[in-house]
Image (tube, rainbow, N blue to C red; front, top):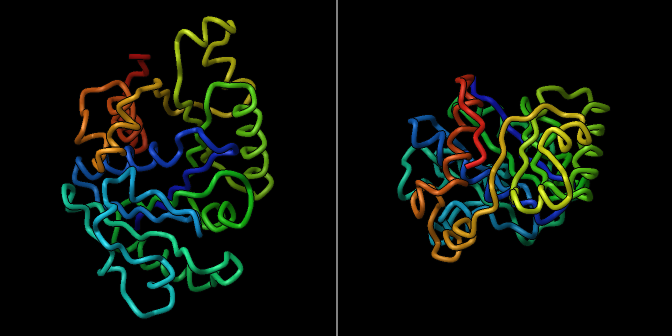
Length: 246
């Protein structure tokens, strides 16, 4: 049975969607069957980070309504084991049938090794849509105090929901900024109250890759951000991987 992975953030601007796309692509590179679902109803953009803007992807609404099957999900042009369902843009969050969404995810478990649920920032309806069914949680934060505080709040909410297996990803880390405020990654972990699964340095190639419509691991496979995402993918599979800030 496949694993449902919710990718969350308390605050916008953490780079959560880019991280979700990078980790999913890294797992697909290793031959894992991966399905990415954009849960940001009305404001979808996971297709950009995946490099799939021209793929004409179905929305998860299309599949939940029964008009299409999971087998018709868009297949990535570079990673044949990576599939994608986008979010509907013309449906309110309240119209999403949670039982139908859950049924779709049960089917996805049987067809994929990992199903990534890319939630919108914050803790509203899209957060619940992704968090309720998930087995594993990747909580993406920036190193700034506001982002870390919001991450801690999301972690608390997940624990109140009875959720475990929550791991922190500190993204867009600048060594210069950390030195200027005398902050360490340990400080971020202590404030968020969560164990760490990865640190990703600020890297302009993440934005450049999206601008050129390419996945980061194809555009700049040797850049620090891409390497960090590959290491996180290894840790998700249970393999040891170093945690260098480079």
